[in-house]
Amino acid sequence: MKFGTGIRIKSSPALFIQRESAAPVFARSQEPQREAAVPGRFGQGSSGSWLKREEAIMGTAICVELWSEERAAGEAAIAAVIDEMHRIDREMSPHKPNSELSRINRDAGAGAVPVRAEMARLIVRAAEFSELSGGAFDITYAAVGHLYDYRQGIRPSEEALAEARAAVGWRHLVLDTQAGTVRFARPGMRIDLGGFAKGHAVDNAVAILRRRGIGHAMVSAGGDSRVIGDRRGRPWSIGVRDPRNPNRIVAMLPLEDVSISTSGDYERFFEADGVRFHHLIDPGTGKSPSGIQSVTILADDGLTSEALSKIVFVLGVARGMALVESQQGVDAVVVDAAGALHFSSGLLAAPRSGQSPSQ
Image (tube, rainbow, N blue to C red; front, side, top):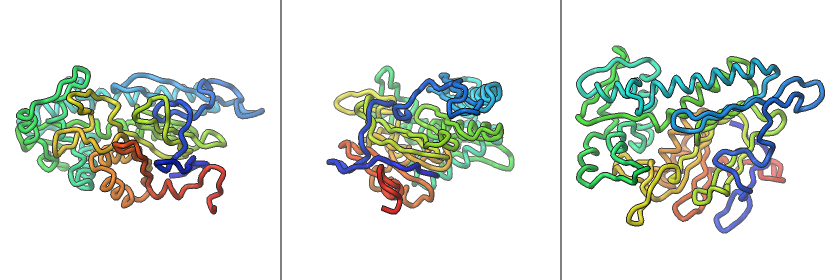
C-alpha cells in the first residue's frame, strides 16, 4: 500500500482530516472528470488517453477509468472488466433465481450441493473472516437479513427475528473441499456474499487489467474501489463522504496501488420509532449496530477491505480499531455515532499536507 504525499489533517474539535468541497464516496478531488479520450493529455509525444466507462451492475454503480496508450486496447480492457462484473453478478446474486448462490440457498438445506472452485474459495475466505472477527462477519446472517425491506420500511417482529437467528452460525455451513460441495447443517439457513462480493469483483477486474498491461487505473463498485499505480505523476485522491451530509467529505486520501472500501449506515436504511434500521447487520443480534456511522478500510485487496469494513462496523470503534491495528497493511477511518473521526496509526503517521515524511 502506498500513500501519496499530502494527506490532509488539521486540528479541529474532532481531530481530523480537513473537510473538502462536495464529492461523493470515493470521488476524486475537484479535478477534470471528463478526461476520457483526450489524446496527449500528459504532454507532447504521448499518444495515450484516459478512458472511462460507467454501468449499473450488481445493484450498484460500476466505474472503470484507465490510461491506455492505444484507445482500442483500452476499450477492450474496460469491456473485459464489465463482462467480468456481469459474470459475477450472474453467479453470486441472491436476486437471480438461476445464480449459483440461489441454487445453494434453495438446495443446501436438503443435502450437499456441488459448488464451483471460485465459490468454494469465497466460502473458505468467509470462514477465515468469521474466525478472525469472532463471528462479526458471517455470511449466514442472510437468514435474518432477508427479513428486512429497506425500500418498504419493513422490519421483522421480535418473534420472527428470534426464529431466524437460530439459523445463523457460520460453523454450521459445511464445506467439503475434497468433494466440492456445501450443505447447511441447520434448518432455515441461507448465505449472502454481499459482505465482500463487490470487493472480489474489483480484485478480479484489477487482475484482468494488469494481465492486459494497464498500469494506471481505478475500478469501483459502489463503495469499493481499487487503484492501480497513480494518475501518471500524481496520486489518486480519494475522498470519504460525511455520513450525514452527502455534499461534504471528511477525508481526502492520496493513494496508489491500494484497495479502499466504505460501509455506512446511510446506504440502505429506514427510520422507525427513532431508530435507524440499515443494511449492516450484526449476526449476533440480527439488528443494525448504532455505534458507528461509517467505516473506511484500506488494504492490499478488495476482498479484505470490504470484509473488514463490515467487521469494524459491527465490532464498534474500540474493538474494531484494535483489530485493524493487528492486521499488517490495513488502515481505517471511522466516523462514530457522534460524528467524531478515528484514524488508525498508519494514517496518522502518513505525511501531512505541506509536511515532509520526516517532519
